[in-house]
Length: 88
Image 1: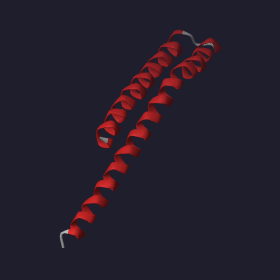
Image 2 (image 1 turned 180 degrees about the horizontal axis):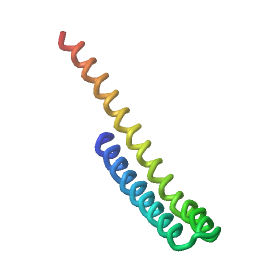
Image 3 (image 1 turned 90 degrees about the vertical axis):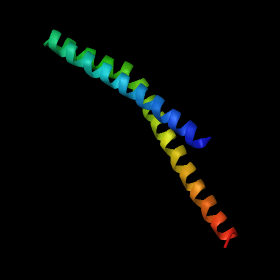
């Protein structure tokens, strides 16, 4: 169950972080191409603030999912080793 939940968290995190990161980059490029003054820089700061929150949440989900997957692998390796000792 930990492997499934870890995989789901990893996939959702990749989608959230990837989507918000791509949208932020596209918005920043469009803001810089439309305005060549300090107004474009203020749009970039705003987009990093607004797009950064879901990006950080997505990264958190990615790391949480990876942690769960590693923990599940370690637990299965320990249980397989213990079963091998029982049958010897």
